[in-house]
Length: 364
Image (cartoon, rainbow, N blue to C red; front, side):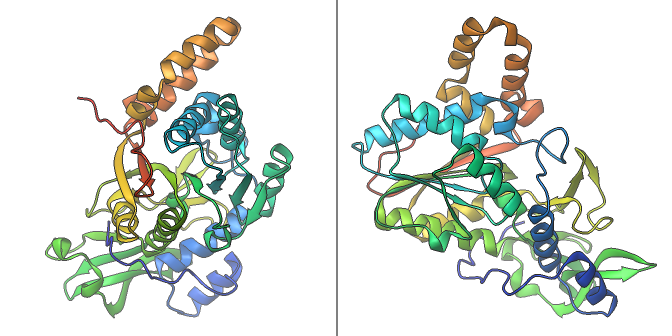
């Protein structure tokens, strides 16, 4: 599930079709790749709702516990201090409701790590409104190209890359083909396309058995490359946090969530959250190609423990003993291996002249 080398792939361009328009195009046998489908469906999905929380389709770490954003705030304050306390700008990619930013900025202020400005990369009007309600001074951008480059940037990307379009390739009797979306028996489903795609599959995976699926993430690589290049030019650091693996690897990780349950990716176009596991090797390679230093990934649980989540939990329990069940439950969901602790990974990216980031020690 990795190519890790395509850092110049263009993003999906132009006006993306609505779910109804895309379904009509597929019915008319227009070639629609998994990437086309995923990009269009998620654009509609995020633009038309707040998907977070118990009433939505999924819950992210910042919504589970304030401890998550606070640990990120401590990480930022630490690396900023060791970098010489420069002026900087806080950036978040896909910031949800703004919960992480609020918690991180609150902790950062205790260490005088106050950014010159806050920049949020967000394309959903619904979520942008929620973010401004919590961070009125935040500035919004549609993509990373619009971010300022006059000061060092500290960039946080939590569950951002998993929602970006992926390409899927399947090994057939006639070689590798890109998977496309077709209509059959009045249903949308995936099928092997007609165009040969052997050269698009990582060489180490090309000899896998018929039926094997491989995923590549050129858009993720391109965005990481752009972010890392900004850090190289102007200084700063970045954290990428998501569920994923170290590639290249074979397998189908495309999935959809609706009301906190896994559902058919193609059953409700535009009405479910479609994601894929993140290939951290691809992100590492993209950052390194830009000249930045990539550290990790390490499991989220170990990173949070290294940053002091249990010490902070103890302080909160002493201050608010009536919240014991909530606080301990939240901590365990973030840290424990059977919850988010092992599946979720954290990758650090820093400018070459910035100090090494804390938290990236893998314990046995």
